[in-house]
Length: 160
Image: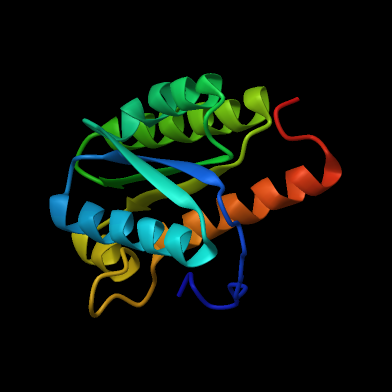
């Protein structure tokens, strides 16, 4: 199982501003991911603002706009793509992943990667943080982004 061996991260990020950019496909799964990310931000003392986009392909362009705005200390991208019968899955997953990585590097801004790329809906449900889920990838993505934001602050690279 993918969650085996994951670190337990505890973050204190009082007052940090976080943009959570979330796709709209798979409403139940997205509800769990968003709830987990918002909860993790709150527990860390960060303020979360949620922006919705149609699908995972659109995550990078809104993440880039949030980064350019200068309002946020960290970004969290949440989405789910479930494999179908065509190569569409590979194109969307690769474009979203590459775009989010580019945003992080181009803006020296942490982007928590909460994009589930699953073969089945059951796999996504197991990872989305709902009751009965074995993992909470929304919370993990938010916590990771905040931890990197704090690290960047410590090394003086935030916003360079």
